[in-house]
Length: 272
Image (tube, rainbow, N blue to C red; front, top):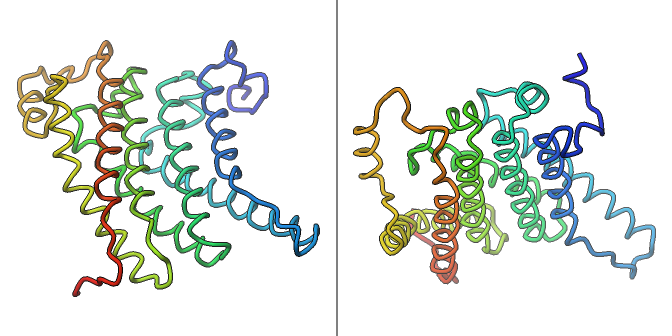
């Protein structure tokens, strides 16, 4: 079946824009991950190349696994071959773009924190994968948009909302990882505390920014708005509020990370 076979011609925008976006996200993600590599020639050229080979292969494998896990969570009702090759669904490609970039920035952060240890890298990958996987499940809680309906209707504007959502969680998670990794239990405890702190602060900025710019966004208004809408078409295909919502997510996450990032625990350890 030619529609399911891979061809470089299909990634050209005039052939299949959705596939072009999808492939660009993968390539850009790899560039982000490998951008922090340094060659230390003090131990010789061979060791420098050997280290680069080992760590790059490890990161590429973890990058592929991250994308697989995150897309399985967010897009479990959809098939890549159907949406990209058959329907040429740009909305689907936009969501995968956001998830790919999120995966890349998370991996870039944990590679820096791992300090050259593959054991630390694998532990951090498992930890952040669980955190971001749970975070993806909160999309329907804080927004009135239905991702399945967005993709079925090919609403590109609302797909951008999910990009902003995933990138905002990426910002919150990566900012919570600035903890010394001498002890795994201590690292996880403080990171989770930072995330909980961010979750507490996030709605405050979210409501404040929404009020300042006249955007009616809150969990209360969400429920009342959904109750007043016809059940046949909660979110129409002509809904273009996704860009505003994406910017709102990112702005709120940035201000939240500014506050939570200034909390330094030092030698404090919470009683368990």
